[in-house]
Structures are given as C-alpha cells and as structure tokens.
Image (cartoon, rainbow, N blue to C red; front, side, top):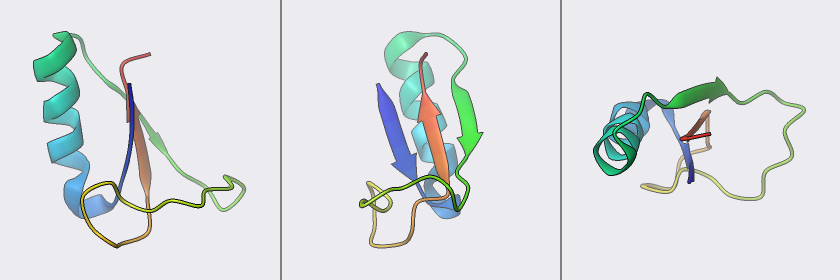
Length: 54
C-alpha cells in the first residue's frame, strides 16, 4: 500500500499503515524529480510524502 500525502496529513497516513499492517511504515520525502500527477489523497494540496508498508 502506498499513500501520497501532504505535510498536514502525514501523521494520518502513518497511522493508517500502522493500523492496517501492524508494521512500521516507510516514509519518503518526495522530491521535485518525482513525477506525480496526483496530490494528497486526503485534500487538494500537493503531495509531499510517500508513506508505504514496503
């Protein structure tokens, strides 16, 4: 599972990964080189983090 989120929703994304998979999430800061056509999954802001269980 991968969640793209803004800074405001990073904690929510981390909590979802921990609750669902019971493992520590991998949190990566997105850079300008990351080509994303989507923003935050929870609002209309630009995605800043990629939170995943892998």
